[in-house]
Structure formats: structure tokens, C-alpha cells
Image 1 (tube, rainbow, N blue to C red):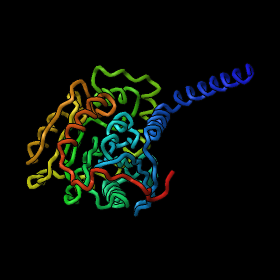
Image 2: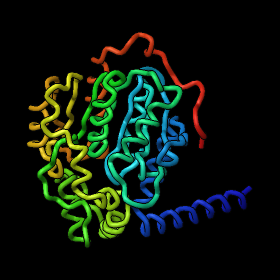
Image 3: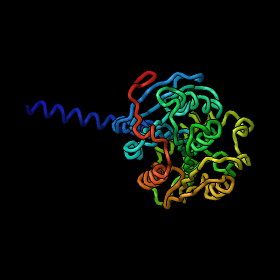
Image 4: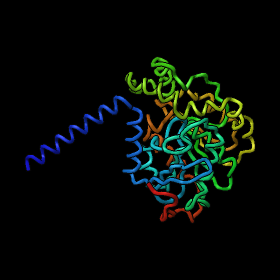
Length: 319
């Protein structure tokens, strides 16, 4: 018995050493793995859908009205790991890896907003949520995609929730592709509240590597002309659906002036500010974000038929 215990302890130590080495060499990839694993532990299931732009991975679970959560540029579904458990107690969650992000295809080449929108449309048109009314919430680029989808399918979306992002031009000149450690530090300083812990150098180096080879570089490679086709600047005056803005007070990447400009263009729009928070409340202030989301969602009048819906039969290829 003693030998078995010693072997288990030894195996645990070896596992800890291996994990520590992996985290040092690839801290961002290791963190992503942990967050996606947390989604699984929370009870979300991962399914792969076939679309016109390739296989798309979606995490889904819970019961009740449909809530779609969309991540930002260079991120993936695991970004919601700290708010998903509370939200899925009340809602059926659908959390995609946007096209070209996470485990969703395409895995190479330029990545246009049109590609992301096509994939999102086909995922949300899949069984069993094809005809279900929904709320679409997104952070950063995900907020932009939420508005593009909502504008195209107003009959399906009951409200849009935009978290530190939107579909109008951002005048900020902060770069998202740092060339070295110091630029990476400045980039993080713009997206995080000053009270957040500073990242060690090996994390900054990994950020430089991924920023210049990952989805962000592929998104920017399409050029400003293509990106501008998807801006809704001065096109929101007739937008009648309710829109809720949730903003980190310390966000300097998409600052408060942007939120106020966006609010001024929308007829039915509220703005909630989260103090001591930067560009991604799901990281820095997940409890506050979950509380605000639930307040907004509980004030939404979903059709009675959606109150008890859940996914009983999973479409696509379960993973």
C-alpha cells in the first residue's frame, strides 16, 4: 500500500513539473487549455458543426431562454469560463469559437469579418436552436459581431449586449500586434485596470509571438477597406431593438468616449459601467459582469415557450 501511495505522489510531482514547464514555455496556450477545461467541468458540451467556411466548434449547455456569448479578437470560448456556471443556471448557453479562433476553421489565411459572420449565421441556424429567440452578447470584436448578426436577423434577436466593443469606428491608435516585450507591456496596460497584476516577461514574450501569427494578424491582413464595409457608423438611427452597453471604466483600448458615442446613435440603449475594470470584464470582474448580465436578462420578456427549453439531442459531431 505504501509503495502505491509513493508512486501516486511521484506521478503527481512529475505531472506538476511537466505542467510548470509547459506553462513557462507556452503560458497562453496552457491558460487557454485550463479555461476550456473549466467550461467542460461546468457542464458545457463541445460540438463541431460543418459550415461553408469549415468546421466550427461550439460549447453549449444549460436550460431556458437562449443566450449566445461571443468572444473578442484573438480569444476563444474559454474566455467565459468564470461567468458561464452562473449564467447556465438560468439560461441555455451557446458559446462559439468564432471562425479562425480556438478550434474553429479556417486555420490559415486572411480572416475577414464576412467569414466570421457567415460561420456565426450557420452555427446559430443549426438545430436545435434554429428558431429559438435569443439574446446575443459579445465582448470587443464579439460585440461587433453581435450587432452585425442582430441587424441582419432582428426577428430572432430580442436584445444585444455589447461589452467594451461595437460596430462603429474606434479612433484609438493602440496597436494589437506588439513587436517586442515593451510594446506588449503597453498593450496590456491599455486593456487592464491599473490594479490588475502585471504579467511576467515570459507571458509578454508569448503574447508577442501569438499576436503576430494568430487570429489578430489574420484579421488585420484583410485591410481597412474590407473592414470598413462592416462598420455601422451613422447607420444605427433606425435600430429599434434594445441594446445594452457594459463597459469597463478603465478601458483605454475602446474608451468610454466610444461607448457614449455609440449610445448616442441608438434609440433604445442603456450604459452600465463597471469600476476598476478594463477591456474584458469576464477576466477582471467576472462576478460584477455576471450580476449585470443577469439583471439585464431577467428584465427581458422571453416568449413563454422558451422558458424550459434545453438541448436534448445534440447536433453535429460531439467531442
